[in-house]
Length: 485
Image 1 (tube, rainbow, N blue to C red):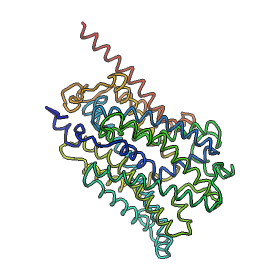
Image 2 (spheres, rainbow, N blue to C red):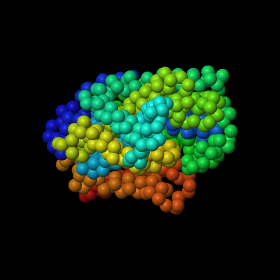
Image 3 (cartoon, rainbow, N blue to C red):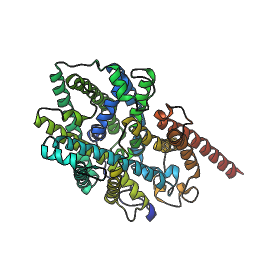
């Protein structure tokens, strides 16, 4: 779509509605394989398995969560297909043409955190392989700077730099990379599971991990209830949904390249409920088999591969997991901030420059490693900060505008979405109140119940969405009354 009369501060070629729509079902499917099939994705799935206390409980909790994810991604995905615009441009409809820079930057900052976390995970897989050699093990143990071992730092920098090469040619290169990286880790996951099952002597789908071991591994995660209880299973489903919180905002960055809703739906069905459940099943089987073989609860793939006697298999595992983790970083944590930073300064920052900024921020964060610690806690804190934005955007698009949007107006500063000088006060009031209850109160005070933080993303979406709907409908009603008068 050609945008006539677009304001220079709101438009560049990267932010314009998508012209080429060649992301078919397979490419959409691989958005999800790239997003889930990573060291962090496996680590979270294996961690959640421990909370369930059994295999059947795990599949039920993950299955329910995966269906919720499919529904929510379809909401934002359909908006992307219909409008063809990226997330920061879509946000202008609810937050205003200038106000949308705030939710864009929030999403960009979250992506930078995840960028660092995923890069650190990928480099960790390489470190686990290298320390098999005495010379690297000695260097790893005796050389430290920036709060990490020298080997950790070098591997992080290498993984960090490799990702910059992938985006040199834009979104089409991203699509080709993910189409290869996603299936590759599936093959490695199956090899890993089969190898461990063969060593264990059987394929187990019933967990024999003792309760005391489960309690020891899960005691500091902030999840209510003991493993296997209803409270714990509900928390598992909620955490699984929250893990995708960032992509609920910017999945339209990818969906806008799909030719139609049918292609999007097929890719989402296979990539979300089907793929997520199967991936979790393999993670559960691997966790059980690893315990049977090594008599330890191992939830990091690099911890498992480090114990392999077969050097070739250990090397294959390390390389595959590292590449797959780079895949999720490019898809989930490079594309979004690239568009987000471009949205703030479209005349100075294009897609590539935006990605470089995100990578630089992740590099600055590395010495502090804010992503270290419990996977469940990290996911909940990150997710709760952006739930309110999703609530406002979806209420605005589906309940207020009924799925109809003036796309051209999104690129004009004096058109429909100017609101109060380019800022929509009602959207910010709703989002701020939602963030207070979703993130600030549970994480920085003891005013809320201990289980509140697990469901922070849901509370943020609901509270912000309801407040926005009330304020927006009241404003529309007042405007109509004034017009009639």
